[in-house]
Image (cartoon, rainbow, N blue to C red; front, side, top):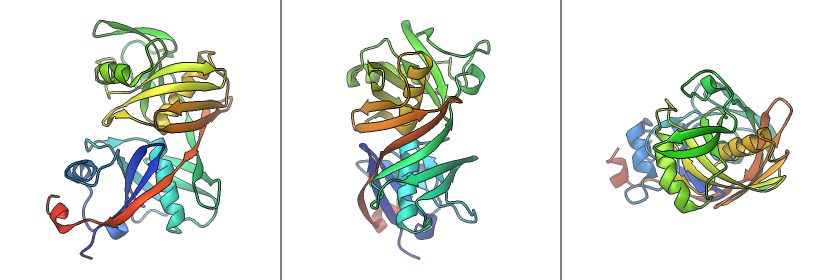
Length: 283
């Protein structure tokens, strides 16, 4: 096979490539992921869904950030991968499962065109060793943190990946781009962290701005939606279900009594094609 194919989708402005090993005869490495995601020298994307992985019965993916690092989970990436799995008939029923890492993700295709998709996102955790976060073991809920001389009211949430949800800052692109990079790499968070600034609109609606670990400022994020909604409910600011407004669109997060999150949002196809030999030579 001499060709290398790509499939591009967007979920609320979060654009991603699906790279299927069956149609991409190259080894996926951090350097290849970086080149593909580069908006000047590659195809351009907020991340890569690499799968279905060979020799695994369940359609399973790995997710790469634009900097080449591998993320434990991506909510929008999972929906995009689910759309691809459905379109390519790796799954034939509207209810099916996909995998990422050790997690099994239930999927429900909500309409005939797979425009709206729901995924189970697992159980939220607020306990500091699970984030992970330094200091004594405790639930990090409305905790005052001082990072680089700035004070924040923060709730830390693990959604399969780590998040720091902050309610007391201006919820603007400028603010998250100023403070997000500093919070991401703070020594409090040994594995770095995703950051959300949150404004509560009403008991069932929040507005968030997002700084993603390994990606930077992001128009939308599924795991960020789950983390922010979970923090808003845990701190008594909201009740489930929570509509999450983002720069790129809106998602809905439903939480049960055990803090299991269920995420619903849209996916749209953008393009598909073959990579040119000039680009492949760069890998």
